[in-house]
Amino acid sequence: MDGTNTEQKRLTRAAAPASAVPTVGVVVARTGRLARLGDPLAYAMDVLGPKLRGRLRLVARDSRSGAGGARQAVRELVEVEGARIVLTLAGTEVLPAVAGACEEAGVPCLSSAFPWQVYYYGGRRRRWTYHFCWGLDDIAETFADLWEASGGTERTVGCLWNDGPQGSWSRRDTHGFLPAARARGHRLVDPAGYREPAAALDGHVTAFREAGVDVVTSAATGADLGVFRREATARGLRPRLITCSRWLAYPPAPGTPAGQAPQANVATLVYWTPGHPYRSSLDGTTPAELAEGYERATGDQWLQPLGLAYALFEVAAHALATATDPTVPESVAAALGATRLETIAGLLDWTSGPEPHIATVRLAGGQWQRGRTHPYELVVVDSRRVEGLRADGELLPLGATDQMSTGG
Image 1 (spheres, helix red, strand yellow):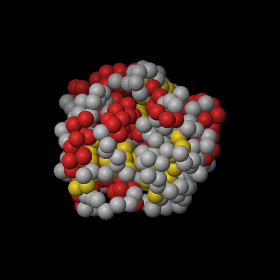
Image 2 (cartoon, helix red, strand yellow):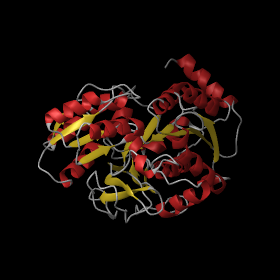
Image 3 (cartoon, rainbow, N blue to C red):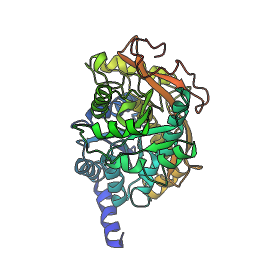
Image 4 (cartoon, helix red, strand yellow):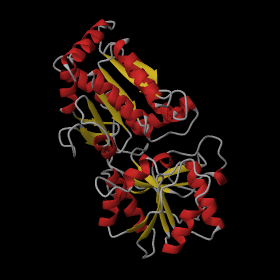
């Protein structure tokens, strides 16, 4: 970054409206395909806005679920609203675009819900941007725990991976899923990546049958996983377990009939639930209270990103409160890098992360099982990697569709 551009950006920030309290900018999807995943961040902002009034000013802009909208949102938050820090959550295209725009603007950014290796190694080196999440290796370790707990002696796992960023990062020989799974003794069968949305996945079904696969792992969308499950059933491929991350970390879309939900008895990663043993550093809210409030206010089932969304504001408030001068970007960035904070999403520690600017989140193993309150509920079936978290159900065979979960 040359001196002229730096000075221009400094003058642009100075021209933004002054405020007696620091402004926190939020890039959140309110329109487009990611709008539903933007709901937790929007809800956390609505809840915390009144509580933080007088300490912080919260302002949001819509990413419109795309990279261009995300970059425009950052420009408006920085140049028009005078944001001292920008927050965002998830989105394969959106999150990198927000981080890149903040790097260009010289404004601290905090993000989450994106495997940290993809964030850290997938772009330029970071000066202004900070992140907290689990890693691709953490997903592999958690899934391997479930593969090995599902019974059987076969260690061959079929990989239903696309030809986009999710599949490309999963199959890398370094920094990710593949080496961690292999280190556990599993052989991965990875046919050519498919293009989303998938019209047919018969090639994967054939490859898995020929390899004797009875465990499948994926990062597919719900729609694509549904295509695979229907074709596998029609062709006589009946895996004992499917593990799936990404969209399958979320419940079925509202109104989906239980019998048609691709989540049915699919195992997934668990990073936050109402049962996690944490409290907010801002107001003492527990995960159970946050999830209950979300369901009461929205009428929708709670989503895992809700805890991460709340924690974004906790860390931002902490950094701005502990910065030597919250009006100076370098001071806010230094405060972020020195943060070690107990949050509603657990301990977030940037002082001992795997790489600079990274804090990690622990994972448990879960499974979507028939529920009592909702058609399908996420049941924690393996909590060994999260201290204080209780498992509230047993891992069921993939075909056990008539059992009710005991968890919530």
